[in-house]
Length: 375
Image (cartoon, rainbow, N blue to C red; front, side, top):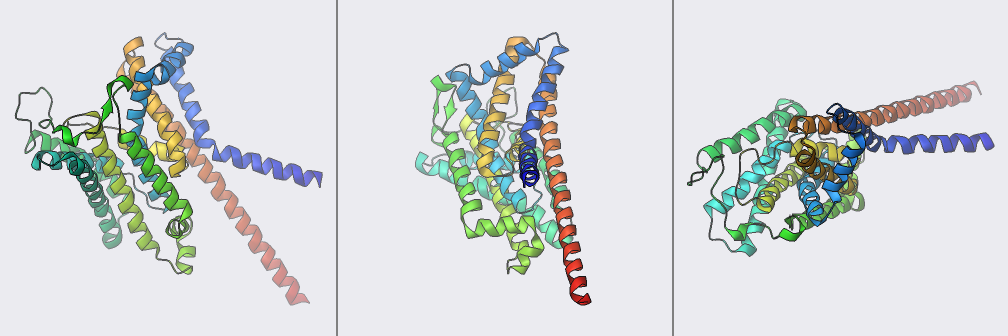
């Protein structure tokens, strides 16, 4: 009996470690970052102190952290929805960029809209733009048999280049500016911000609301249960009377739409115009946020805040310690790779455990059948 209890405890500890593997990966990534910084003659202790100070040192730092987290939270929630349904959407970057383009389309083409209509219209149109971009991947998957992983990856480049073409062409600023961008938007199209809090904007409330809604949808509704079942086992889902293909389409549309909203919120929350390259790397970072959050919208909240703090802290550290931006990208890349490796290890071990359990159950069933036939 005692040994059985020990085995159960050991198994539960292993399960806990597996569930925490992305978090462990994030910690390892930060330690790797500290090692890189030491090559520049900076003490690792200084690295951690400056990182924390830049992320949470005062009200301005906290506001910067929250602003950096907003698009990651929204796109991360959308990514979690796709992954839970078994849809391989890695087109967050392209979907985010066309979402930003939707904001510019409304603000520049319909400049006289009142504030009560302008911002909701931007959010709706950016959701539709993101859906349309995800729809291209759905089309190729269903009618051409091309995996959505490849199509969404390629669409990232198309999305960023489309924004670049628009700000250098039809939406080009009429004033003399040194960087490709549009004309400034009217104030009715911009989210409210607080200068004393590091220009924190109301997008944080949009992000938290989206996380609550998507989390509730996934875990507390029949539709969410069907979506998760389809992701775990399409065959079991079909046997239960569901349509995995339909669920895949819905999940991809929701995921693309939310990534589009992330782009529009980033544009109207942190700027007053659409700039070339406004959301570079945000989409890829949201992918790491979703993995760190266990592809659970509720888990995306702390994961997104962690990455927001990381971004804000590193920006401050670049100014205070004179660290080159290339080194900061290297540190961020190390953290993202560590998180993904941790998640991959978790998936690999859990899949192998499931296979072993299935094999044992089949062997047990076969031995019982053999005994019955002998009797």
